[in-house]
Image 1 (cartoon, rainbow, N blue to C red):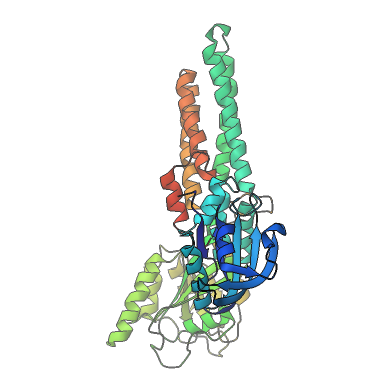
Image 2 (image 1 turned 180 degrees about the vertical axis):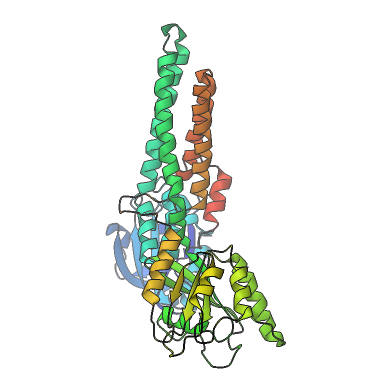
Length: 459
């Protein structure tokens, strides 16, 4: 299948200014010759990486669309194969027709992620770099984009390759000692191998520790706003969004469904959810909303509990505070802009059991900067990063590192227990293989299929 010429629409379906049909493989140029007519009839002789004006024609010679065609010659392309990209008008019909004509002349419809898979198989990218492509596409903040670009540039891959290179050096040293036992070098070699193995374990554990921060910047934090009806939950959402996204009225129970938005808090994507007010109700629709709220509380990473400072604590408030004791949460005393404050801060502090407590006015935006700072401090938990820090963002990468850490620990324990070096070498080789899963050096076909299946068709 990797010898086939593949084609797909590489831009989102729908109406737009431009839409692109991408063709990659040994027959890409021949297929383009059948369906593309340029003013310069010898366009293939004009050189690679050029743009040509012309028309897409069907088999009857009828014009399908007026296009620009990009011709890129192997190996200097994304897939390291010949690539042709047809820039059509961005409508569904011209794109579909151009693609169908390409398929009719011998191309095969690309599978999800197949262009990126070929880039990996042809040595254009390693596996970690290929995975960063989807992270770039899905980045929710500038910080997430910077993290994905760091991985695309190969910063994580270089650190993993360095670890593997050191492991291979240890394995080569162990082989030499095993092959020449008469030299009596095993004891001194074991001491050196032990020291280097400990250093490698520290490096691997440092990458594992940074994985949670990487995941936060990549995937964001699921955050839910809860509280009784009419305490200002929707007003808080609108204030954090800086727009009127949720309906705000004096009528309790206005928010009956879940409203989800993504907010950029100092580079961290907050997947924030405004929910129905928590209360006992006989309204059938509102009951469904309340049930969904309780379900979302269980699944949320962070809870923002809004209390009405003007009305004081109720039994429902006390019950809600008690129900989120085990959750990472911030308690917000809203409506501090009103003259009469009837809530007892000391009682809330006692019930909150050390959770952050902030005075805010969602209506006027008071306290929002402090809220954002508190959210970031709570989420990152003091984990500082710099521009030189290599962060692991993928769960798959973290799992591979954890497996390597286990094998390195086994090797260290084996050396300290004075096991023969040939037994210790098994653990070190396993660690080398685990690390290789990250860059694809030791990947299997099944692993590749699982990874690239998450990509969109055309990428």
